[in-house]
Image (spheres, rainbow, N blue to C red):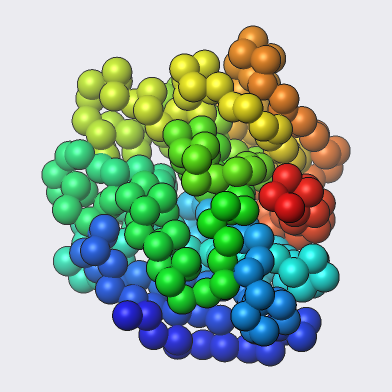
Length: 278
């Protein structure tokens, strides 16, 4: 059962927000979905899922990314889930880079996180089933993208689930979390101190072990304050080159880590996914 909690007319389609009780996280979860006119008329549409970054919810993408116009023109459904479980009994951290709004799109194995922080299961199993049941989503044409922590989620979940996600891209992703402060903190808490378990959530390690048969697109601002310490896209670029994976890494002078960068190139990503999926 899903509950419609907000809806706005937008580019001759509808931007909606739903709430439901999640079996994966054991909490209420919200997700946003943009339905172009074709979808409102009941036609199956290619679908792109956008995973947001640290401190964000579905609202950041919906209100700042500027995705609706391009999605309406191409007849593409856009889905934006939340970034973590939420609720009074959900474990949290004093910092902004772990806990609520910072689920890292993994299944936690350590207490107190393991009970609710099951975002990998939610994104790859529960949410696709909900989408297929309630919307004219063609799961054979499902793409995945995201920003920062969400870019990490997009790359890792696509690499591990090529049968589900047929296309993947990212904005300023955390590509090598096992070797950056954000990832080291989160993985130590969620997954424990055994670093051998971390590779399953690292895009660089996954592309080495699993490869990717399609193309990958990454957009990265050169003025991003997190570029050198946290993001390190050149590490993923080398891993893809070594494994023969077709990566397009576009560096954009003067752009930072904000949604101003995402909005500048969002239409490119939607068009790119459309070409991959249709």
